[in-house]
Length: 82
Image (cartoon, rainbow, N blue to C red; front, side, top):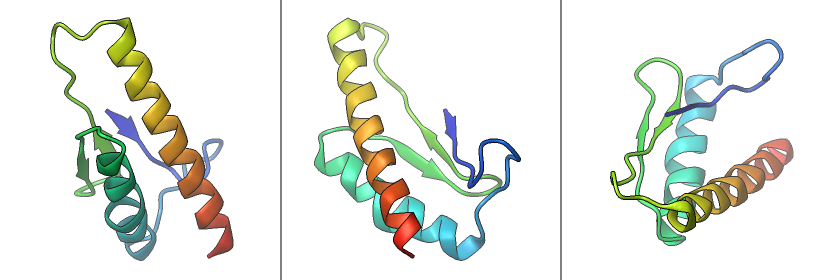
C-alpha cells in the first residue's frame, strides 16, 4: 500500500478535489494502461493498494516499480501545472 501525500515533509494530504483528480483521472488510468492493476482508496488518506501474486519474482517487482515510478512522476509534473 502506498499512501499519497501532497508534501512528504509535512505529510499534508490532498483536498477532496485534488484527490479525485489524482486517483481517478490521473493515476488509475495511466497505471492500468501500462498493464498494472491496482486499487485506489480515498476513504481516509489517498492510497494505492497493490496485491502482487505470492509467486512474484524480481522481474515482476521491477515492472511494478517502473510503472509506479513513471505514473507518480507524471502525476507530480501534471499537478504542478494545475
